Image (cartoon, rainbow, N blue to C red; front, side, top):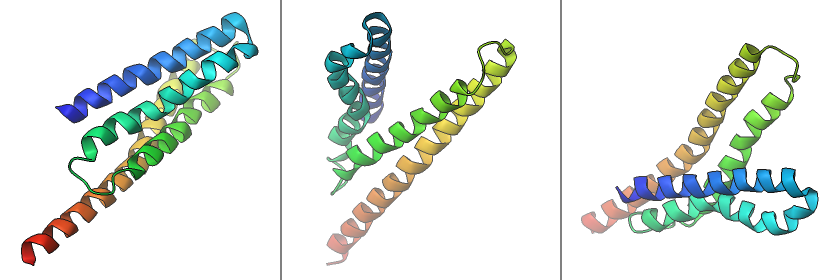
Amino acid sequence: RQWIGATALAAALAWLAGMGGSAAIQAFGVMSLVFVGPGLVVGLLAMGVLQWLVLRRHVPGARSWIGVTSGAWLVGVMIPVTALSTVPNGWPLPVHVVVGVASAVLMGITVGLLTGTRLVGLTGQALRAQSRVTTS
């Protein structure tokens, strides 16, 4: 439950930072990045930090989770942004929908593979450490 709560809160913070930052840049121009930039950094780090607060209680060495998660989301978010920016505005709506859905699925797979690989590594380390303690 704590993991789900941390993930949901982090997703809300990241969404708010991303959408709020985008709206501010559109409304006030690129100069608003001076004020929006720190919020975008918070949004990028939110998932890793809030999940790490839960994970660190169960897995030693979980600090790397913050960087891995932030990097995975940075790479993942670039997928739909790049894909959708290649579809001209005048093209039919179904094309935009197909590209949007396909790139969102690819984003999810990418983030899942990057973070899942690290999570498997962390839990494997924890299990090996636990078995050394119980067999000693």
